Image (tube, rainbow, N blue to C red; front, side, top):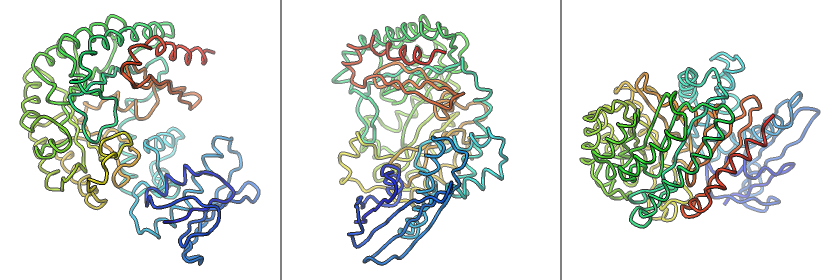
Length: 490
């Protein structure tokens, strides 16, 4: 157990998130009363901030490091951000030496590292400056810097110029056949809650009607439509038909550039549901295997086989779907590098237009987290080999990295990467990650983000997660969005 002492500040959250990259065996204390102690203190000399970190064993200082930054000319928000980063920098070097760890994203604990690159490009900084900045200020490793920079450059053609009158629309379907062991999303098992699907669709369209009026009154145009979940294709063909017809009735979707539906799990995909999607002009679907190993599918709670995945993919091709994404997860229970390579080889044969490679994250509300002691998690070195292998296969398939995000408690503090063939990049994914466009979200558990680009500000408006509460309180969900818009009317 390591005791952590903070002097001159109380940024416990930021410090704990940094330390968790190296160890979870620590606690905050007031004085050096442990055999092992990390102490961080800050002090000022004029406008200069100094952050000193020392590591002690048996009350003797073993390691020390100082970082400093000039705070002059910074506003309150920038000042606070700089203080936090300075503290983390001075601590990072000590933690890195103490634990002899490879932490590829340096001091970054946030989920959107590419946003930093975009901000620097917006300031007119050149690539060489950005590479130096990311290395010296954040301690990011060279390969991750290169990855973030390349993704940012690819994304900018879809983000800029920023048009505040354009929004993306998300529709959430919180039903699943079964709950996968790693999942923390709103996902109500169909065998228990399936009888509520028709009423849920009715209430979704009620929310759509209210929100559509709000968008019309504020001259907002929908650029992309994304139906996600859960598993949207747990809806029957008739329910899906009703939903999409209703969305097109309520919203002006005549100018959308992209219409995605997560077909997701093969045990919910059939000819009838795909024909409904095709009829309504869905331009992009996801068929998500997560793995192409039958034994793993059973272990993670999937009730389908690899052959089911292949048959669903081929059926979608037969019906004319020419933009198919597939998701996989690296680090699943008992999977080794050879099994990951088998997954990638099978996907290579199918040749999807895009592939999203996730690193397993241990999420708070997942079965994995509840039963964590029953699993042996993939170690860092093996995890990096899996990521490197997925990059190699993506390149071989002609897929370029086009968006990226990270999640808390990911194995190895690594990343999720979306790859796509040229011209098949998902605009919705890019916008939702880089937060340059407002995202209007409908359904239980969905979160609307109002982006005020000129103020560098984002306001979140959440819908209730509970299915029954959403059905009973849909008018309140509409009013929450109205209140946020009215609050910001100039």
